Length: 323
Ligand SMILES: NCc1[nH]cc(CCC(=O)O)c1CC(=O)O
Image (cartoon, rainbow, N blue to C red; front, side):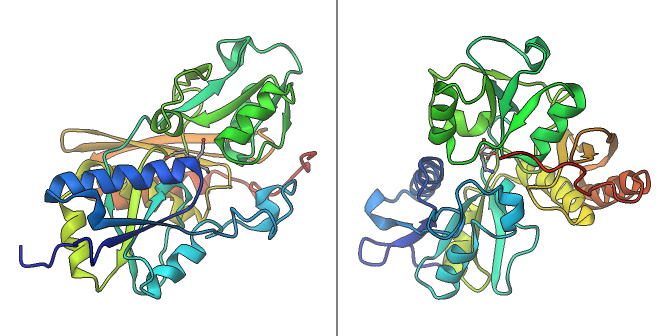
């Protein structure tokens, strides 16, 4: 490999949001890069960047994210820093990444995927089926809200925003009796004391790319490319190719009620996908299996077949959630 590896004087600058989960993911990325290239930690610099999605002064904390518009809400300032060469790579939850990157930037490195499932966080009950009639649950995710209401139309869903720590505090304060978080986030933060149970994807199909860290870089940056190649997980990339093509064909972002999960069995990929009406009154789900090399086509084909089955106004808001 004919590249100049980073040194303490010329470190690889890793950009990240400042939330505890984002920082943990940046550390995981740094540790994998250091191990793969036999470098010490001082050859890396972690640069925390505040994004619109994080800055409470830029947005009303009680306004649902979907009203603010969330495409790139957590990525814009980070991508600007990379285009300005203030950072070299950026670590993202792939779930929060728009399906298309700005000119000059690319996400072509994915770390081995964590647990893809959602977690049911509740002191008193084991599953969503056990919740009492009319129970109050908190979530900020349109997908989880629609999936819950689809199975339990009696539930009262309240807006639950903020990072993982904020949401757990709201639960402790009795604002709701259950909430939902990605298993991946809880595991990465080693939050072992949280009362969590993994929800089967049959009950709650995860968000596209859930549990996968994606790393962005400048297209022209050969040093970053060579370094990232050594920690890239090809199976995760193939699965995300199917899921993200599915999402792109539906033109959704992470806050629309869309779910998908691809799984590999040797050279065969199976993609499960679901679209829901925002109020949960209707869910359309199906799966498609084929050769792994056709992952992207499988994603698009499944999306088209689900779209064909949606009626007019399928994604429209029927009822506004109460804040
Ligand atoms: N939208 C917020 C977000 N983005 C990524 C994760 C968790 C980690 C992951 O899925 O990779 C979370 C929190 C959550 O859904 O609980």
